Image 1 (cartoon, chains in turn brown, green):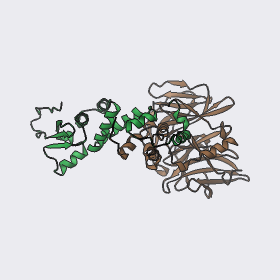
Image 2: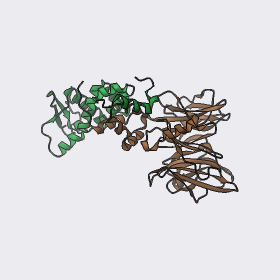
Image 3: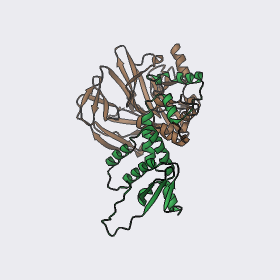
Image 4: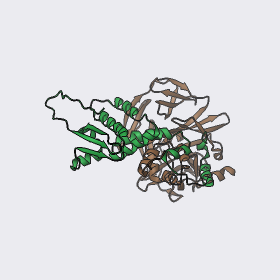
Length: 323
Length: 166
């Protein structure tokens, strides 16, 4: 059928509503479509039209190993091949930030890999200066002033001294920064999340009580903020001293459920129960279900995105795989 | 089809102004309440700048498509319609074959009706999502300018995305 060719802005309007997986396929349509789909403004348009793009990245621990799976809203769950990361049981999922999640482990010699699960692409971050030292945790976020992505890691050296290091994606290099993390705070390394580019960890204070520590990616400072009480769903507004909480949903009481892990769009959310098993709780029906016979340890919810080519170094990850 | 309520119950209401839209493809004419037609930014600009005569010619849009556009505008000009009603009505308007949808999105773009553009674009995206890329080429009238080797190379980059597709 003869058809009037669609103007480029209309084509972008339509294609930007497709899930990333199908965009990757449609790059094969023509040489004209390929750069259109790779274009940074198209990528951010697609990322913001989140309708089709909510995903969960789930780390499940199995007997003798673990798998990292991608659970998009519509498609079935896919396992990602990250065998090059070695044993993933202690793997931390940091972020998400614009569809990218940072994979690392706390402890010594922790490799850091940036992962775009929706494109199944990876970028290996070079070894940090304190690679030999103990790492508590890290984070992945976005500096909205320089428009740059950053990885932060902090830990302790032997003899005891705190360190904080930052990796800038744009310069592909690490630098040490002269700040200290709040020493009264013990963070749960699995609790890292990123919002508006900044990073937040949940944990406990030695002096008693819970706390949330934030790290501003723009100003490179730590910040402590209050935590709402109870097991409900709260939305955080603002940041730093301006922070306020709005309760949007009361959960439970849920006996034996410990830690919220992530949401799906269908009103289902996942919880870690005290025994380490994962349960799903449906907000509508208030039904609790077991989720496969595995032990999860982390879930991260994110909006998938395709990313500019320069970002991904899949070949490097492939080389790592071969080693 | 395009009949406006003849008798205004509220006598104090000002008399409703109408506009006539004419498809230049098949010369079909539609008499529409002005406030309905003004949801099109293109028409609003014409009316505001006094460029609109008694009959507004609409080039490149057929009567069939223009009727759909007017149906959308009428629904959305109704202040008593709930969000749910509108959603249902929108779904009905875009429950069309892909080629009609493409004509409709072009019309929404030309007439500058944001809501219709969005709902139609989403429907097109949903309709092409599970089609092989070869079919998508045909629908959008895009010529395949890859050599077989080039196409294979692009595909090889994310071969997993093609699982279940030719």
